[in-house]
Amino acid sequence: MRFMRVLAVSLFAVVGLPSFGQGTVATVPPMGWNSWNHFAGHVTDADVRSAADSLVSTGMRDAGYIYVNVDDTWEGKRDAQGVLHTNEKFPNMKALGDYIHSKGLKFGIYSSPGAKTCAGFEGSLGHEVQDAKLYAEWGVDYLKYDLCSFQDNMHQVEKEHPNDPNAAKNLMIAAYKKMGDALKATGRPIVYSLCQYGVDQPWKWGPGVGANMWRTTDDIDDTYGRMIAIGFNQAGLSKYAGPGHWNDPDMLEIGNGKMTEDEYKTHMSLWVLLAAPLLAGNDLTKMSPADKGILMNKEAIAIDQDSLGRQGDRLYEGGDLDVWTKPLSGGRVAVGLFNRSWSVRDVSVDLGEIGFKAGADVRDVWNARDLGRQTGVFTSRIPKHGVTLLVVGK
Ligand code: GAL
Image (cartoon, rainbow, N blue to C red; front, side, top):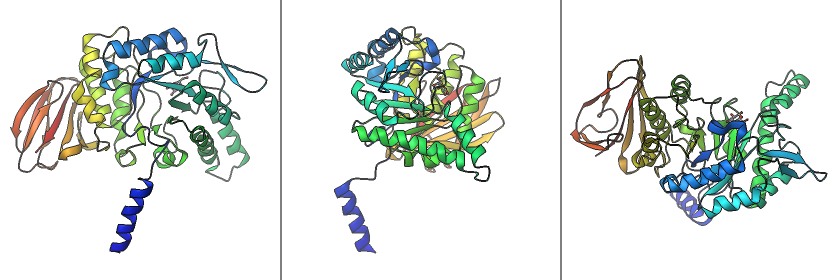
């Protein structure tokens, strides 16, 4: 038995730890910007370049936001050889990738396993290997692969195999694996991001198709109701996340203007506790100081990116109050005390219950304040739709 353990340890030392997804990418949740939440179908090459410029000038790149991801509507038509071309909004993808890389950033792109993307542009069905090679030639570092019209193929196979309850699911998994394998075969490390809205529990089969992250939900929008419906629904998924493979509750809406500052702090707090990929989705050329303060809060980002790589989960919920914890390196714990109600409320956590029976040093992240040594029940008075985000340590 002891021998077996020694053998196992030395084998890992030789071949390295088992890796998930595309090699060594996404060892921490990917951070960057994506065009969809703000620009949607209007995004152009110029918008993406100016987003890249802004990531540098605002300090976001240095805070960790390095992926610049072009979402749907860049695609043109295929030529006689099947090679996909861009449309007139994106005159030269290789040049765009070079520009992004020249800024010390990474380049992301979008496609679908279906014949058409969600916005009705050309998808990758039947051209997976060819498209993966093209992405690698363009210098792509990240692919979001969105189910979209592949749902038609799934309905079709369901009709053809009415007695097989897994026919559609298996077809979908095979389609995601096809692109995962094609990306791997390029030899270029490319983050592989699945977007199929969380149906059929992608956290269970995502790692097997080479995914580094998978959406756990349908689309977010810039409303408090939708954001918390997604965020607080992530309870129970923490065990499926870890270095190289993350749950993705969708991109950030911070800075898009329809939530209050407290609501955006709730958004950021929940996402960092969830070890979620942090993809800003706002117009980076027009950020208020408050938006910058939330998106670039170093202590909040450090919770998300913590080297332990553990996703947080719900500790308890009562009415409109919710308490979440995330284990951090060094025996510390991040705690989110949330008030979803329409009035000021006290929200508490028992420090003994989260591993600090003898008391703990408590740090208030959003107020950047050390609250000193605390024991027993810690209570915070929280405004409506607000949060207190803590880092607790011995
Ligand atoms: C949706 C996806 C969005 C965005 C959009 C583009 O299916 O969830 O994040 O990518 O398609 O058409």
